[in-house]
Amino acid sequence: MPRASTNDRHSAALATLLLVVLVLATLCTPQLVRSQSSGIAIDEVAAQLGVGLAGDHSGQLFVGVSFTGVATDPAKLEALGIHGAHRGARVTVMRIAEDKLLVEVDEMSPAPLRVSVRLKMAADGTLSRA
Image (cartoon, rainbow, N blue to C red):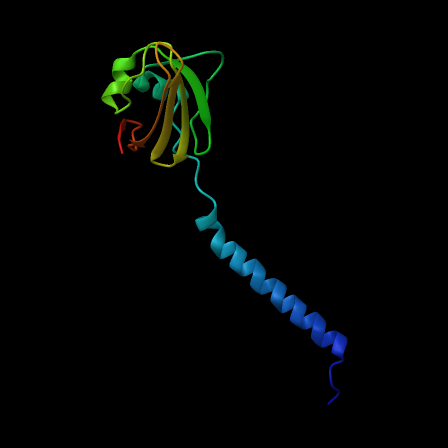
């Protein structure tokens, strides 16, 4: 029986290795890629925070998306643990996980202030303190 040449063995080994890599990539993909189906409208989040949006901020707040607005109802921010903000303060919101938001408030007057708070977001989009 003739022996397979060295090139044939290398080709077979590379093909097997490629097949193994493709199978592993296919099996691991669901854990690596997050579903973006749980978006909430940016204007809904802004309304819960008492933030007015400037310009066109339509769309969904998916993980990694952020928006900036102006505090129009500081009492809503206060209820979520963001203390000391006044009307007109700049508010930046970023969705850092499926169920978490990072909210930063800063202003220069009447006194310099910078507050950063993480909030939890329920499946229905309701915000609460983390």
